[in-house]
Each structure stands twice: as C-alpha cells, then as structure tokens.
Image (cartoon, rainbow, N blue to C red; front, side):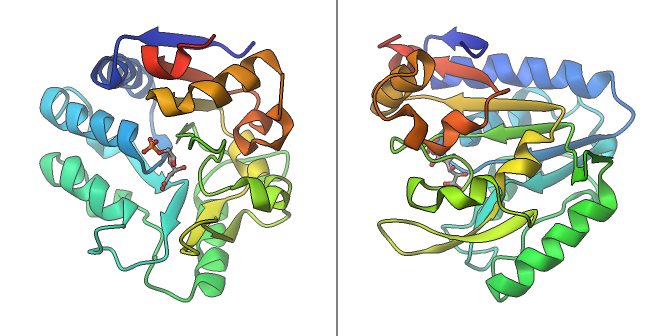
Amino acid sequence: MPKMHIYQDNQAVAAAFAAYLEEQIRGAKYFHMALSGGSTPKALFAHLAAAYADRIDWQKLHLYWGDERCVPPDDEQSNYRMTHEQLLQHVDIPTENIHRVRGEEEPAVEVQRYGHLIESRLPIVNGRPSFDLVILGMGADGHTASIFPHEMELLTAADHCAVATHPDSGQRRISLTGEVIRAARQIHFLVTGTSKSPVVKEIFHQTGAYESYPAYHIQKGEWWMDKGASGEL
Ligand code: 6PG
C-alpha cells in the first residue's frame, strides 16, 4: 500500500502538509515544485499564506504547474489565478521564480514551450526533467493532474506535456505526462472529501476498476487524506 497520512478534515491536511513542505524547503538550496489545482491545494495555499509568509525562504522556491486549464490567467477557471489569489500575492516570491503554464496560448504550441522550459530548468533523471516535489490531486473519477481515464495514453506519452480534454465539459487542459510526474523526487497526493473514498479504496486494495484510474499508475506517491477520502479503507 502507498504511504498515507490521515487527518480529520481538509484544513488539517493542509496544515500538516504545509509543515512538511516548510521542512523540505528549509533543507534545500533550490526547490522546484509543481502545483495542482483543486480544493485541497487551495486550502494549502491559503494556509501557507497565513502561517508561513515569513517562515519560508521564498527566494529559493521555483513554482510550476502540473496542469492548467486553457484559459487566460485572469479567468476564474485558471489554476494560476487561484494560486495567485490564495498564495502568490501574499508572499515575497520573485516573479522570475513563477513558471506558469500559459493557458491563453495555442495549446499545441504551449505544450512544446512548457516542455522545453522544464527541460532547461530541472535536473534530468533517466531522460526526464525531475521536480523536487509534485503536488497532485485526484478527482472522483480517478484522474490526476489532467490525465483522465479516457486518455490513459498520457501516462506513457513521449512528450513531457500534453493537451488533455476534460471528459464532461470538453475544456482543454495542459498537463504534465505520466513519466515526468514519476521522475519527480517526491510525489504527494492531497485528496479530501467522501466523493473520493470509493476510488481510494479500489486503488489501495487493488480491487474493482483500479487499473482504469490514472492516479493508480503514479505509484510512488504519498497520500495525504482526510477522514472522508480514507473512510472506506
Ligand atoms: C485541476 C486539478 C485536478 C484536481 C482534481 C481534484 O486543475 O482540476 O489539478 O487534477 O486536483 O480534480 O480536485 P479537488 O481537490 O477539487 O477534488
């Protein structure tokens, strides 16, 4: 079973993970981290802004995104916008340390640009750019980053980034692909809410449709969950 950390609720997960993150950054010279969208990271960012604005050396942190919606950065759907509102505008991080996915650009062009950007900025491990840490969420359908169950080929794609399509809305997204995520030194899933518990159970017990969930295939991740998401384990 993957390593797991279980807390009462979303807020407690955010607080525990923020403390963990602070330790990891403290011990590093530079720290390259890929962020996720979603509700649990949102709580994490708010907590980091409230409790760690002057306890983390933001100069050494470089931020990237595991996925982004193909919308402009001021759109309500933008993961960058959410991160900016919850975290970036509240802390002293240099603009040049923020490497956002440009959701406003032509997706096919942007995946190439972003792939080259991470390749030029990160150490290469087994042919892949390697983040120090990747934060992931998981949807109730088992998707992670923007790798959805109907696009499993993104797990093994040759390119570092790909254009993905949300199965319900048809919204286009840009996502890191599976091999780049797996090349990270550390991978952490932040997963909260009872809607996730059936999929969490299948993944952890390797039952049911577990192999059809993209999150199952990112195997070295640690899971930070609340009672809701872990309730069926
Ligand atoms: C996104 C995400 C996505 C998210 C999951 C879980 O941009 O939508 O990166 O993979 O993490 O959908 O989202 P919640 O935490 O809101 O359930």
